[in-house]
Length: 302
Image 1: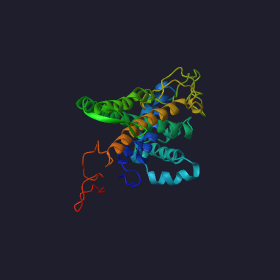
Image 2 (image 1 turned 45 degrees about the vertical axis):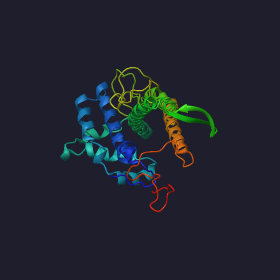
Image 3 (image 1 turned 30 degrees about the horizontal axis):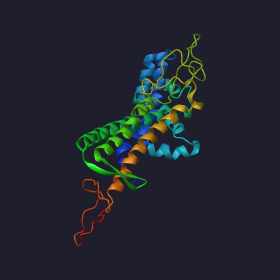
Image 4 (image 1 turned 60 degrees about the vertical axis):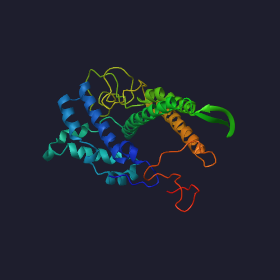
């Protein structure tokens, strides 16, 4: 589905990572990872687990519009998705097995799946943000070196201050932009569907969680589906009521946004006609200050 939100300029850069189709992919991945984790734990036959998980497919195999409409009743799309998943894995004519239906969403809650899928979105968004920040940092490092001796008037509360250099200003931007990179990397794990717990030697229960424990239980015993999802994260135990990782993720992203806003604000201020210290390169589709055809006064031609 192409990105068409006219109220979010530049949103197409993230739509494939955090848009509705991406969320649906992460929801399906979460359910599949949980089935495979049960197989790895010996709660169900590993071969059966692998086959059932593969049969779930990807988000593209499900009708996102129908799931969105059905979500109104239950407050989230997982309820309708689970029903469709069970129909899919149980379709013998298409390579499924009716006996696989109970394996889907076994021992999970909608919150388990939604929260883990959202953390999957955040992890991929962080990867994109980190890449963009490092690329911008490389460009700023070049500017700082090239313009180390280019004089520039410093300002305090918008009033003239002692002279500095554009290289020094670019270096300040660089420090702000990259200073939060370690924090973003630490936030990369985030809260996950931990799925860790001790396996009951008496075997899996017939009803409820496959081994008497579920997402977020004590971190001992078998490995979490979070490893498969790229969300190894922290051993938090029951993380549904411990939202520190989510808060740290928001704080790290806010710090990165503030660093970018600082650069943008400085450029806007220094590009004002009465200051004219900086300017952005002209580019197709970008608003800029080219001169009017009938006037010597710069104008904004959008």
